[in-house]
Image (cartoon, rainbow, N blue to C red; front, side, top):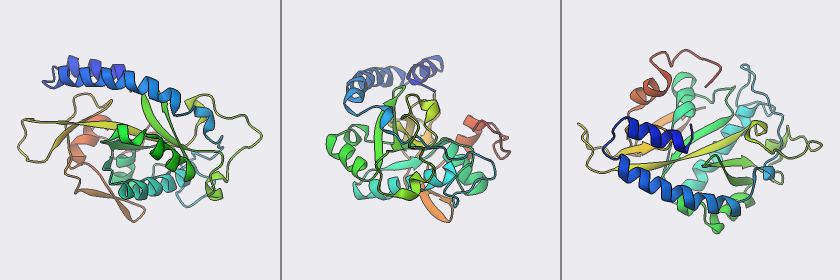
Length: 246
């Protein structure tokens, strides 16, 4: 799901917040286009040959799920250190609810963030890089990957040094997607919990108190409040039954 799909979806669903959100997203998109030129390219990511086998686990260093789990652990610590709020969403939330782990065949971790501007400051980008993660943009979406010079060698167990660096997202096997969230003030709900729209999430209203948590491998992470509604909206009522396209 990309930027244009998001705007079209909001307009098509006649969301009262659409006009204001579209204007802010157009401005954000323009800013991001210039930011992306400065934030480095995808070829800073390590070319990994990790496995997406359904038999993979977060305990096996040859599995992409292992890299994703440790990337999530780092982001959780990093965001706490910088007082940045985030929530687990989309496929990562699906795996947490259904199996309490990372889906073995997924390529990414999905999280929603509030302060994207701060994330793209040189100070934060440099700090992320020093910790082994490269921040870049692809299709208008901020992403994090393990870079080639990371000191944590266990995350490079499947690094193919003979292969040229990735030049497209199809060649990046494990990364984090960072979706912007926008609060909707005055939304009509039966709850006093703050309501947010998530980029690429169409008109779905996410209730986020930042108090709800979900378990992944016996560790808890922040998530949205209306989990069931979220999963049904994006994965249908059959979300508890695994499919290979999540």
